[in-house]
Image: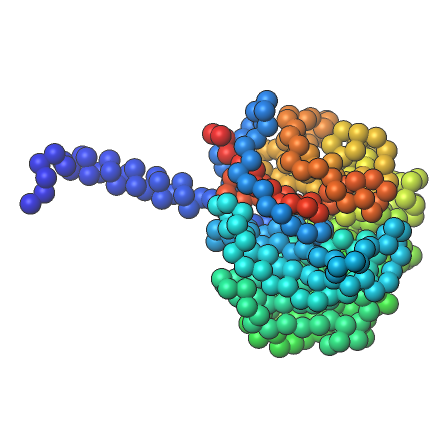
Length: 451
């Protein structure tokens, strides 16, 4: 017998409320890989703060971590981050460009998203020969109950995301005869179906694809003296899916399933110091790339012989044109490009010509500083910028101007390698929060509209 007070109208109201609650809770997004769920630097959650309170946004938790440039990944109520611990008595060289054999370990940490408690950690010996040796560079990738990590010396791991146990592993230097790049292995692996696509190096193996569940090699492709650091990206151009591999000698398009080369655009001169770092970006049929010395390159990919639209005329770190980005992936929006240049000049360019519209140092360093940086994530009609000082900025980016709405300090810069303290790790945005780390801690800060 139904209770008399539960009328048909009341039942309908109750069902509607439950549906609203279910939709609301389901809308919380994860950040399971480099640049977010769709690998495009867009944070699609709603209900996000418009500007920061006077006292700053609410800090949910802080947790200690070791050194590293690797940003966190957030998935299924857990936070994954990689770090490094120096061996007892060991220290990094005072000159960050110096290379030796510095003993220590790399770790993969799994934290509870609710309070930052360590749920498990996986640690392995890893002597560093890299320049700028604070720690790993690569954001973990979560997919289908597994977490994939790549260390600075080429240790590729597939771990059980629940327990932290090793499912399979590969060693790039041993397995492919490659050498550790100057700044370590830094190309964020890409999941595509059953494939794990990696930037490796070595003879014929700049790009290597593994079975994501077993670690078995599926195919390898491309030769280059050095692989660079740019993450593999898959875009659709001219009606077909194309795997873009950008190394210092060429931009390459491959069939993601077979490794067949669709086209190659040689780079003359090659990218200086191997600094192919920011992710290649797509806008319509345009493909944009940027590097510290060589500057910008824009291709129109509408055939198997993509023509050059424009490129920087100056190979320089100071006398720059276009956009000479160090590590931050720029934004292409409505025919314009936004991003930091070589000395922290945050610039707006016309995408079809490369013409500079405006520049400002406000969101990066406040003044001209070598490698001045801010990472950029889009949310709705505004952007969240996380700069090297540890500040999170809400801003509007338009062809007219840079408009700062609000700013809050999240973390102190702790890495001294560039000659000043910096935070050079990309944050994650999930569950209406931001997750950011330096070389001492990781912090989770609420960005929900109702604090």
